[in-house]
Length: 209
Image 1 (cartoon, rainbow, N blue to C red):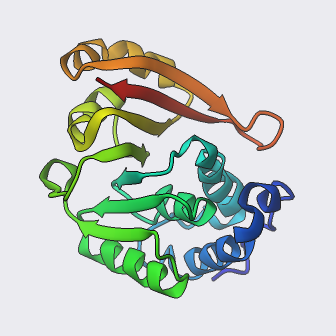
Image 2 (image 1 turned 90 degrees about the vertical axis):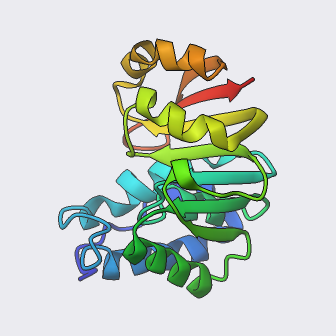
Image 3 (image 1 turned 180 degrees about the vertical axis):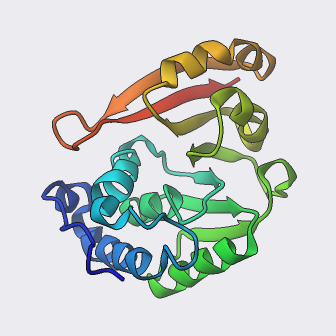
C-alpha cells in the first residue's frame, strides 16, 4: 500500500531535526494503514509528506512549552506530527471516534511518545484537568464554528493556533461576532513555509483574554 508513498522531501530533516527517524516511522505507518482505516484518502500517498506531514511540522515553532490540545485529531494531523517535532511540549489529542482514538493510541505506543495523551471526546464535552495553554486544529470546521469549541478550553492568555487554507482572511472576517463574544485578541493570519514548502501553511492565531 505504501509503494506510491512520496519520497521524503529535503526540507523534512531540517524541520524535524533529531526527531526525523520518528517522523519517518509515523509517515510509514500512516502510509500503510491510513487509507484502510479511513484516515487519509486513496490519492494522498504521493503527497503525504508535502501536503500533510511537513504542512503540520512547519507549525511546530509556534508551539509553546506547556499543554497543547489538538481538537479533532483524526490521523494525528497536526497533533502527532507536532508532538514528534516538539518533545518538550505536552499534547492532548481530543478525538471522538473510537477507531481513530485506537489508531492514535497505537501510534503513541509504537513511536514511544511520552508527551502525548489521547482523550476520546468531542471538544465541547472534553473534561480536562486544567485549562490548556494552546489549542490547535486542522481541517475541522470554519473559524467561526471552531471558536466556541476551542476557546473555552484555554486558560486566560491561552492561544489558538488553527491551521487553515487560502480562505483564512475571509474566515476571520466572517467570525467577527464570535471573536467578540469569546474575547479573542491579537487575531492574525500567519503564512509559514515560504521558500521551504511547495505550498505555504496558513494559521489563524489568536489570544483568549
